[in-house]
Length: 448
Image (cartoon, rainbow, N blue to C red):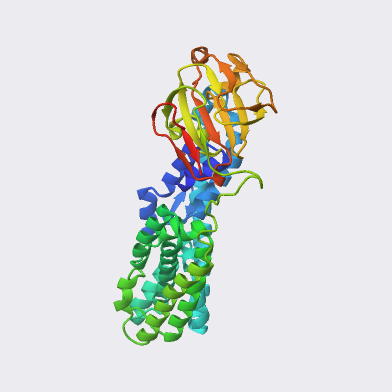
């Protein structure tokens, strides 16, 4: 998924990116990483690494793909480019990834492990601050694997490990932040996700919490790290150790029973409570919520939009055009037309009129900004089959004819004639749209 979204943003072949990612997490590679088995590629040593819980490696790989893909696209003729360019990318990038990214990850992990182990021996409170505050960050970047065998070796050699208890505040602080989001957010979907994520985080599964809640909102993640650092220092001062390897969660508490157990529990409670309180008051949980702002001092929020054309309503999200389907331009409706007359859905001023006639923009008298787009990719027709009936700057009333078009001719040309009506300043309104079915006298959209 990271490969797909990164490739989409960098505008490279998403299928190649996903294939590279699949190679990185393929069972054979994962098994080699688990066994720490060293292999070679034509004599070049390949240091095994586990990429299944990482973020940074695949992002770096897609960046490399961004530079190499144009090279291979130019190398091959267009008749074979779609086959040979991806093959070349895979042949080069997959080995390069395993040879280069693995060692870099292993080296950084080794340095990190050495530094933290040294801190833990010399200045435990500082180790508590680092592990409690930055453990989730370390996990996200996938450089935590070197610490896991160190902790397990400590248990095997000494009977206890002092680092494992410090990880629990890092986990519980994220759970506390999620609880604060649950209590504070006004978004129903976010509240539902935060509630379930709080429970899973308490039991050691923080991925849904981090990627779905705290890191997404940014401030809650940072505040949780602060809370984890405070709790981690308290646990480090306690001197508590784990007598068995376990996933850091409330269920791992029995493995810490012994010296300093009581104070370590205090550190855990402080991390959870502080994560909750800091996030509740300073997390900016509702700061990103859309607020209704009038476009001007004289504008009036709240209006109804009529259907711009007679026809059948279909889901906007189901359109073949990703820009409209993703609602990137704003919320709206799509109508399969029964005739070729587009009329003004509101009273307002024509602010935009494409020379081709396929799109027209209206600013309503109440401040909403409306784009009516006739057909998908119909700009390629260069005005053929479209006849604008108004001029830019003209004031129109609801029902005023705007554009006449030949929807049957457009479809014969190979284009969809679906008419989209988008409110481009959707963030200023709460919008309700009419469901699927034939348009009638009722408004197809209401803005509040």
